[in-house]
Length: 257
Image (cartoon, rainbow, N blue to C red; front, side, top):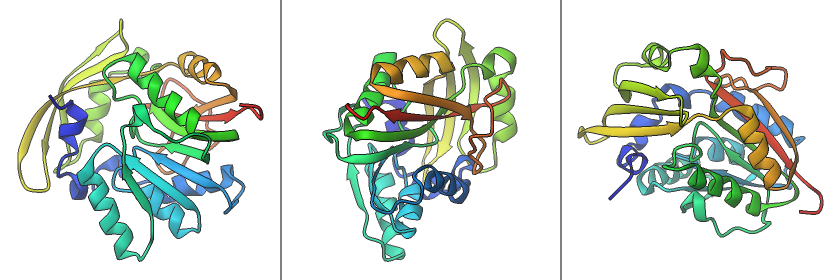
């Protein structure tokens, strides 16, 4: 049986590119470039690359990127977009929990809940971070965004998502936040690129900063910085607060791991 995130992204490439959360690519890539000091020699792994928006923009700027995703239809859309721009990008279908890369990349990016934290269990989410850590070379860096567990303690997730919804995009209803598991459970209504309507029971995990820090330290990241994540405007000067729906995480691996 397919999980909700597998069903959601089937035949959803064109609709995906119109979602609100995909509109910050340029600014996000500006931030990534700054974080890697504009070094064109490095290799980048884009986990949960979706339709390839970050992979394509970074390749266009001269970087070497491999994009992986669980959804063949999103990858197909990514390949189409890259081809339209005459870009050669290695897009591969992989499960982020079981990546086979070992010390091959200098940077891993995982943006807009590309894979983490959509899994059914905390153990599965941790395995995604483990896969990312294994893929990195010594002194490698990870940059990812995830749902901020501090936000639902002070705000209604339902009100926030309602305010963000736009005609034609996926719409969440029956939103409940479970304080025991820090999971948002909801029903998502979506119409795919072929006009098929779907009703999906979704569950996403929100994390507090201390959990993220502990997980990354366990995986030999010597330095972990966490900031607020503003769409298309990532910044190290953006201190994380309870107002931020997402957080931006930057981890650096030890020289000897």
